[in-house]
Each structure stands twice: as C-alpha cells, then as structure tokens.
Amino acid sequence: MIAFIGSVFSPYYAWARRHRAIDPLNHCAVNIALYGTPRRWAMTERGRMAVRQSATMLSIGPSSLHWDGNVLTAEFDEIGVPWPSHIRGRVQIYPTALPSLEICLAASGKHRWSPIAPCARVEVTLTQPRLAWRGSGYLDTNRGDAPLEQGFARWSWSRTAQRDGTTIFYDVVPRAGEPATHAYRLTLSGVIEPLEPPPMLRLPATRWGVARATRATAPPTSVRTLEDTPFYARSLIEAPLFGEPAVAMHESLSLDRFRAPWVRALLPFRMPRRAG
Image 1 (cartoon, rainbow, N blue to C red):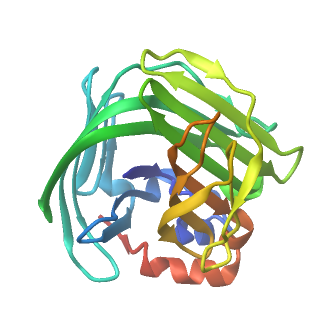
Image 2 (cartoon, rainbow, N blue to C red):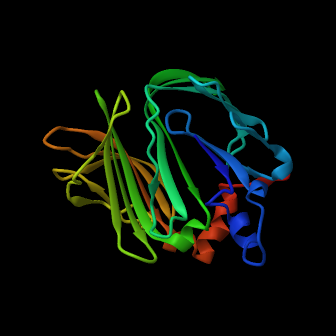
Image 3 (tube, helix red, strand yellow):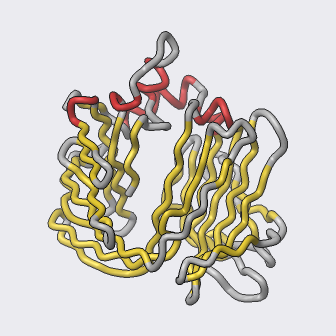
C-alpha cells in the first residue's frame, strides 16, 4: 500500500509539467496491491477536489489514512485494473518504535527518505476480497522537490525483517554526483545502527530486462517477482546477511526506462485517472 501526493510515477503528472508548473495535489493516488489469491492491483489517480489532508489525516477519493499517535489506520475502497474488481478493507500499522532518521538521497538535497516505522505489527482485514491476516510490516516515506527521473538514473532498495529488528540497504545512482549506498540496521526499540554494506551481488534481470542487484554476504536468489514492469520490479529474495539466511523485500527502479515515451504510454492501463 502506497499513498502518493504528486504521484512520481504518474504519466499525467509528467505530461502536464512539460509545459507549466503543476499543483502536485492535482495528481494523488492510493496504490493497493495483493499478491496472493486473488491477485489484485489498484492505483487510480485523482485531482485536488478529491483530496483532504491535515497533520494526522490524508484522504484521497474513497480511501484514507489516519494517525492517532499509536496506530496508522488505512481504510480503502478502490477499483482494480485492468479487470474491474473492488478492493475494500482496512490496514492497521502498529509501530514498535519511531526512530528519527532522514536521509538525503541526492547531493542536491531535493530527494529525502525516512523509515518512519522500520519495525511494525500489521493487521489486515479485507471485505472484498474477503481476506484477513497479521504479521510484521514497515512504513517509510520518500519526498522530493523535483521529478524523480531528473535526480536519478536508477536505484535499488531492500528491507530484511529479523527477530530483533530490520536491515535496510538503499543504493542510488544520481544523474549528478557519485553513486551512494545507505545501509542501516534498526532495532525493535528504535536504535539506529549504520552498517558497513556487504558487496553488491547480481540477481537475474526481469522479463522486461530491468537489472536487479542486492547487498548480501553470499549469492542471493530470487524467490518470487511480485511486480514486473518495464521500469520497476518488486521481488521477494533470499539474500544471506553476515552468515545467516535472510529473506528480503527488494525493489529495482530504472528512471531511464520510466521517462521513455513508450513506457509512459503504457502506464494509463495500470493507472487510470478520475476527476474525483
């Protein structure tokens, strides 16, 4: 689940800002993805009139997120694509700690990342489809003052959940300046421990040819590719860390691919737009 204000992957936002400055609130969306059975995806973009926000609440169309100081509750009612199907339900995220960490991903300072709740308990209750489960989770934020594809050529990210915390690797290749690696271990109590990153090792490329690599201390393997698109891949991988087996969520993003006109022409099939 991702909430977007000024959707960074919106083709409509990209096309509109070629000619003039654009209000990011006119390009907002809530992305819901289910990877089990049934498999469903929703990411409908909406304009300013469908958005409400405050210090503790964000509402985009029929979906909303609310923070009460202890739990983040997301309630959503979205229509999936490409085959219309409802995704209705609630996700509640209970952080174990809220560490204060914000990282500038580029030397310009225009792109920042923060793991708001790197370790959390998550409860999911869906009414359409009728599903429920609970487990460990993660909450972070990316924010920026310029289009993502202007600042970066590509990046990879991974998060490994462990019994006493989580390990995160963020490797970025900016368009200006040197590549950078951000490596942290964050404990359940919120202690932030910078890490010396292990080597970057290759994974098989996706069917679309998106290159994948991750930080690991032994050769990694791909368990399952969850998202396989022309510019982005989300995968479940086995990537041993410091002599121990580990399963991680992994993302690869190619911004060179994303800004290609043929890729943006495909995106409305996955990201429809509504006025309200």
